[in-house]
Amino acid sequence: MESLRDSSVVVTGAGGGIGAALARRFAAEGARVVVNDLDPGRARAVAEEIGGIAVPGDAAAVVAPACEALGGAVDTFCANAGVGTEGGPETPDAQWNAAWDVNVMAHVRAARELLPGWLERGRGRFVSTVSAAGLLTMVGSAPYSVTKHAALAFAEWLSVTYRHRGVDVHAICPEGVRTDMLEATGAAGDVVLRPGAIAPEAVADALFAALDDGRFLVLPHSTTQAHYTARATGTDNWLGAMNHLQQKVERRAHAGPDGARPVPDGAREGEPA
Image (cartoon, rainbow, N blue to C red; front, side):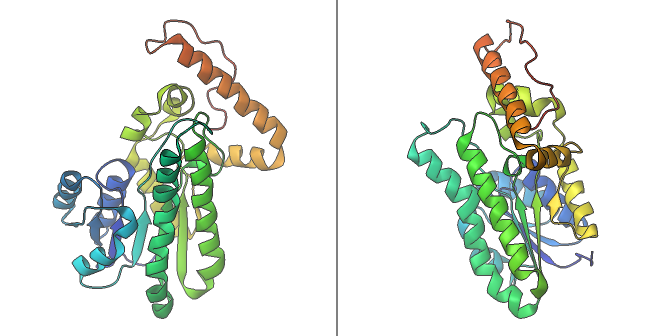
């Protein structure tokens, strides 16, 4: 990986969690970092900490103000902002639309603005925080699973279409990460994600290892590749294992918040997330 010193980086959803960890790591490498978050206070706090530039607001409309704040072009764009919504088909359209807008269309809109300049210069980097839900699925959350699959598909399409023209694309696909989003996942998070949850800094480390190796897929958890392979090569067995997890989540949810009722083992804790 070439030096990042004095390069320009935008990280969306960087007021905390994975985004803040990415912003800190890029800044430590000498990059000029734009910290974007819907919460102005959180964006400014991280920016002040790392010597970056706070550009709060909607992640789907950050490219132009970021370029203005940087006084030039964006070299690396980290599409990290995301929303998690529990539920299935019964989830209201407004929540489905929010998931599509933040988890997918914000990436599309950023690429639409960035690609002309990147293609003209012959270089650029797009980093998409997808989640292992985009490679596998996430029990209990159809909007999150579906839109994260779409985010991965868009990142793959960008790589297929533009890698020979100097555009590098990386898809970060962690399982459980100790963030505010994990805290809001309820029984599904308790069963599937929390046992193997890692720190946001470990996700940043995994990204930089992938940058060094030139790898598209960034898999911070050692188990994800095996789950992804099982899904592709033994789909029915994998679906059965995931259904066992679904049943376990339902039992945990019915036990109540204190978990007073024992939860029988319907699936191993390390099965796909």
